[in-house]
Length: 85
Image (cartoon, rainbow, N blue to C red; front, side, top):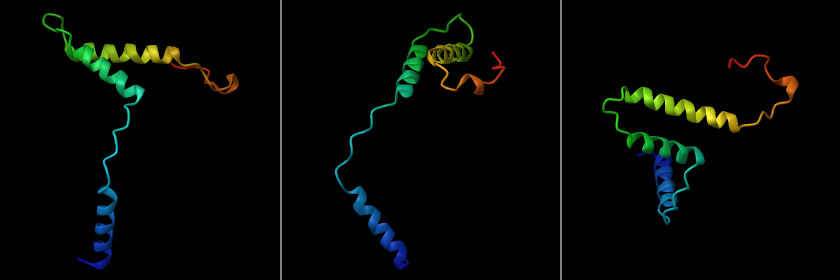
């Protein structure tokens, strides 16, 4: 193995051999997504129609609620005239 590659290989081995770091806490979006999927998985779709369509509707509703909570931070003069809604 060329000398430069050997130094890189040895250098990275020392960095990773310390005590393991605790995992970072999940982001709020990850927690929100997990709750959405867990709730969806608990739903019985027998005789109710398409499971994928139900998931899409749940995601759309969640995003609509999130958008409703957000306040515009852009000055009024910089906002688009038509938002498409």
